[in-house]
Image (cartoon, rainbow, N blue to C red; front, top):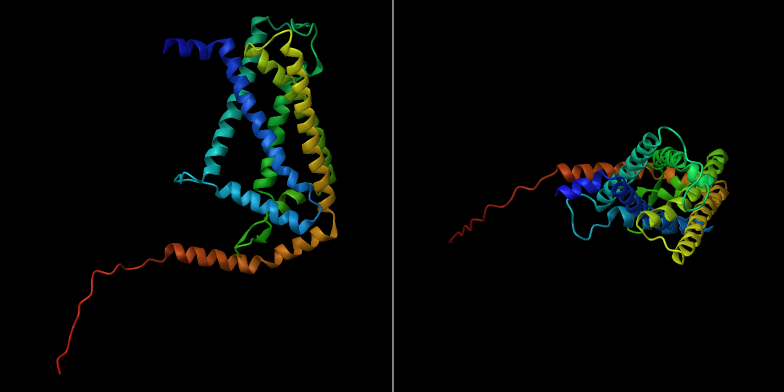
Length: 281
């Protein structure tokens, strides 16, 4: 047990845990980007149907029948991994600075010199934190559009919420720039994670670096392209027509909520048996 505490409090232990949480988050980012590719569908009605079906699947998926929705557990794990990653990054930065007496090194043993991505690693990470908070606030607490799914149930239209988030050209531009920052952060993070895990070899390190570059470029371009496509779609007449259709569903949605509330509060008195009575003429 003592060795676990020693490992968790050591510099190498913190770096390796930070690398593992970073790898987990990197995989999530890739999956999130693939899901967002549905925004590239320029047939608004088709995109609306597929994207809302996708989000309903994610929020309703619970194969093990947990008492709470699986999506909440996934979000909890993601928040925990992200918080731990940030905490360790800031802690290691402070510890390294104290160990050097506040003096920054101008060279690194591996590269021979500090790259711009290396120098700004902590700052790009903190920028990403602020960006994600703002991004999630806009999605979770943004305008509430409505959509009638294939089952005839009125649900939140996450496609319209996402598309309309990019309707503002200033936010769309900021989002694209933010993807460049995230890509830069990922590029250095991937190579650093492998090095921290001890996977540093004259033969494999250049391949890892190339894969890191490809991954970071694909992620940055993937998210950036979907943002541009969403900006375009948000300003099309067809999308505006869907917004009006969404608003027209409000009375039905309110009725649906009342019916659900009534169903929750209603109860049935259980039968305690029957009594047969016969009459003889």
